[in-house]
Amino acid sequence: MVKTHVLYVEPNTFYMKKLILLALFITLGLRLNAQSVIFTLITPPCDSNGIVVATFSGISTPFIVGWEVIDNGYWYSFYFPSDTITTGTTDTLRGFEGGTVYLHVYHDSSFGFLLTDSASFAPPFAVTVTATDGVCPALGTMNATVIGGTGPFSRRDHK
Image 1 (cartoon, helix red, strand yellow):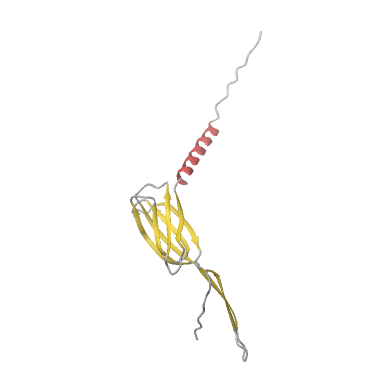
Image 2 (cartoon, rainbow, N blue to C red):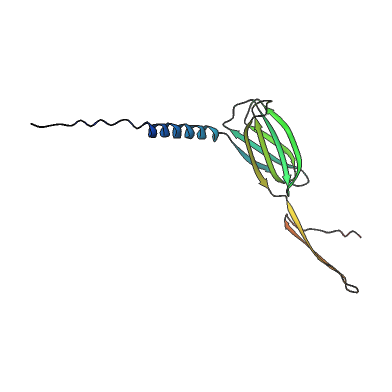
C-alpha cells in the first residue's frame, strides 16, 4: 500500500505585504519625479540684461512661479510670485545679473510646493585682486586679474 502525504503550506503574508508596500513607494516616487524644469540661459548676464527661461513639464496649469537670485552667497533679488501661468509651459526671468537662480512652483495661493529647483550661471567676468602693503619708503603693489569676459579691458585709478 502506498501512502501519500499532502503538504499544505500557509501563504506567507509577510513578504506579500512588503511587496505591496514597495510597489506603492515606487509608484509614488515616479509620480513625484515626473515634474521637472529645464533652465535655459537665453542672454548671458551683462549690465543686468540676462534672460533665463524655465521650461516646465509634468505640471498642470494654472500654477504660480517664484524666482530667487543669489550671487556669491548673498540673496539680491526675489521675485515672488513672479507669474501665474495659466497656459503654456515657460516662464521668463529678465534683468538677470548672474549667479544662482532658485525657482519655486506652487499650485495655488496656499503655496504648497510642487517643484523647487535651481541652476547656476556665472557672471560675465570676475576680478581677483592681490595687494602687498608698502613699507616706507617703498610703495605697495596691487595686481588685478580678470577671469572670463572678452578683452581688451581698461582700468581707472581712484585716489
